[in-house]
Image (cartoon, rainbow, N blue to C red; front, top):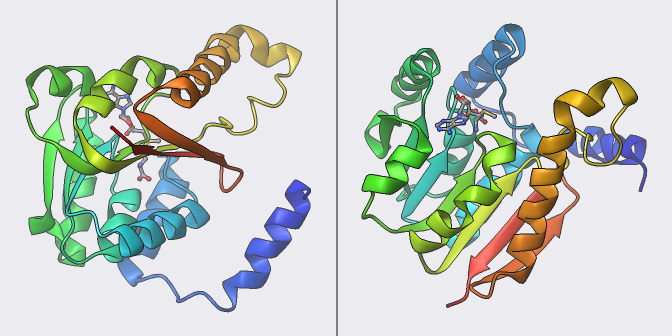
Amino acid sequence: MSSDDYQLGLAYLEQFQRPVNPWMSDIREKGRKSKVPIIDDDMGRFLTMICSVREPRSILEIGCGISYATHWMLMGYSKARITALDNNQDRLNLCEAYLRKSGYRDRVKLHKTWVEQFFEENIERFDLIFQDSTKKDYAGMIENCYQCLNPGGLFIADNIFYNKKTFDLKPDQEAKYKKAVKALEDFNKKMTHHPGFECHFLAISDGVLIAKRIN
Ligand SMILES: C[S@@+](CC[C@H](N)C(=O)[O-])C[C@H]1O[C@@H](n2cnc3c(N)ncnc32)[C@H](O)[C@@H]1O
């Protein structure tokens, strides 16, 4: 399927999708206008669906930004609680404001922290981990994510296509992105061969890895 066909499919399905809540439109608008990265709506729908069918009570979100993905996950399962991390205070302030507006504030613990620091201190285990922080750092966090997932828990990573940069780097992008593309490929390979994960790759949104902790 070409990328045009994929976009046509998304546009066609839009007529059947439930309209997004007003606060979701606000977050999306803010993301677009301020160029703060947020997940795509098809990724959001995927997260809602996964939370709805798997019913994870405890979720760790690595890189929550201004809370777009946080909301998609909360909407999937009413008993889900999220521990959401970000090192950017301005984004966390917006994240908190949007969670108050939607009425979901009491379901989310917000931490202003580097994720590496969080893992040093954390003793909690989670049913689902959503990884959406700096792409080149994904591979270095695999063991930490594995250790703090409950058996049977899910690990989901967004952007394994890195906005298509993993397919093809233009000559003027090489210097800036080559290392990160290589790091993402290492991440994918390590996940495939990790004995504690059963790993799947999906060509939806910007490329998604979904893995289950199997032992
Ligand atoms: C792609 S954005 C997250 C978007 C968010 N998931 C959403 O859909 O609204 C990535 C976020 O990860 C945060 N981040 C990146 N590296 C981090 C790290 N090492 N520790 C904590 N936060 C990090 C950034 O500040 C940024 O807000």
